[in-house]
Length: 429
Image (cartoon, rainbow, N blue to C red; front, side):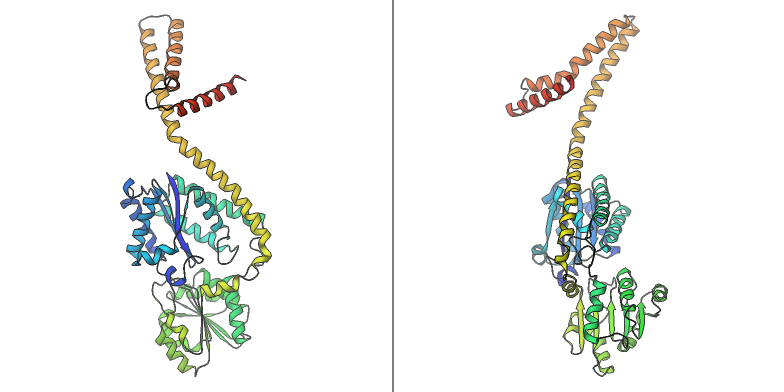
């Protein structure tokens, strides 16, 4: 079984591509189930384990497979089918990691080294959710379970032993910075948050610290919106009321799990007219986007996507180069541990075959010895016969290999001889 990591992220694919292949939580189970049921045959890659990580910055599939290239083909073909994206559009943005490099990549992702915000901690929670979803739909086996548990341990070690997250600018903080550049201060501005998930919670806390004139949470479920509203002294409204009320707000931050835009061109055009062309600042953190791309073309509207914010958070990266080196060193050691685990896993079938063969020979000799005892033979003679017969049978197979059995090359025979010689010399000491 081999480990495969396949995907795209903010460094390899533009937002327009990432949003087309993003997976919502309700889509993951069907995708994983398809891979496990339809692609488990060797001809389609022999996919026996699978997990999906999908965030605003990346979509990645982790899998335990029999044949990496065939598994890659099966996975990409299914993405093309379920996401209605052309293969030629998708292929240039895809990266692939196998075996130890797949582990290295996963460790780097969880440690925040591959994030838009260097050292950000949110990705660990997202990976834990991906692991849980895979477990719930029976996508985890020995390989991926060990990968994820190792990943979480590495991420914790990196954050404990290095300053990788020190002085980092989050997407939420970057959004506040851009808003302040436009308005100078937020004390006279009304702020609207669309959605009530983890990212909105972070943004709400950052914007609330600027003491805006008012804060409103618009959410599909009013109760969830009210829960968040209480933490930042805001009011909550239903998402369905947005078209009639959006013109009231100067700052709009949106991040929902909607598959389609919820803030359209017509809605913002009406809002601008009602506001007499007072500017609106919009931050769209959702992937797929919550705001129709055409909105960016309007005068008096300033729209920033997650990629735009990424350019802001990239500042100050150089000051954390030492932490990056330390983190990479830790990851390198843990990758070596994972490689050793893979090596031991590869030896398991051979070890099991060896044990099965030894048990078979033992049972045969023991059965022969019991017959002699029942016939009244002396126990001492039977024990000697048992020891002699078992020894001969156990050494028969390697002896035949050393003598050049059919199908064994000279190089194989020489290697076996060196291994046996080293093993027995070690045990003679």
